[in-house]
Image (tube, rainbow, N blue to C red; front, side, top):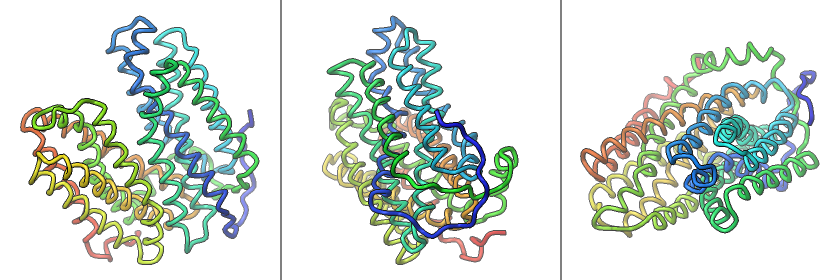
Length: 402
């Protein structure tokens, strides 16, 4: 396995992106982040095979998410301190190894340890996105980042479908081993195709790690982007965490298969991410964020007004996903432009805020659904999106960095 080591600082280079690079970055982001979600449809099979309770196997997704959250902070400085290509290759190689170890784990304890490591190393997905920004020309950065994010979002949305099919036909171990092969193949292609991306900062790892919080203090636009995207993530996660419960209740009476099919609507929203990036390049990201926030709010208000319409539910799912994803791409365009030498750390702040919003949205929506029913979840989403819009409508003078 390649060893990480610091490279001499070099001046910024001209854009070196090609269509094959963009496709590779999108595929890399999707394949890497999918590793987080393969276990979710397999928990019953894992519990049966390893002779443990469902509660024990149910801890596996928690471990991967904890690992991912920790990895965002622990590994973010590496993307600014070292050659980003080298970071991708080393972390990707390690991810392939731990996925294989998960596939042969003889006990729930070893599988849990592997799951934590998978979460840590699946943050490779967050290295591919700054790499897209680094390779892109400034006038096309939004579109390029949007394409990479399409791959990441599709990895999230479709990983459960793939895992369910493979696990049902061949078993959960085959899913992990197959994922290991896929990641290893990705690393092999990346080692041949990705250009070197010399480090952007000469500071030590410790200094860069400490500087993550400092970036949020230094840049008002970063704080604003993180807060607005966190609020939109409350709406996003609140909806998806309660969707199966909503569909199981009257008047729908649908099972988990229908709930899973709604992921296709989310995937459709993810596919327009490059368009959102192109619009951000041409019209400025601020207008895209505001439009996306408004679209999310109106979608949730429509669902709250007519909670019994399945056609409306499908249509609004597509529209609010479009709004959330479009806003995310525009926010990334804003954030990556703040300091090219800190893109990985800036991305860590934005993504961490998103995860906080998702966790809060899931917890609040689940409680609201139990107490007040589906309409309360839709009103939560509308409220969160309107608050995000308010954040983005604050005077432009308040958005300049300190």
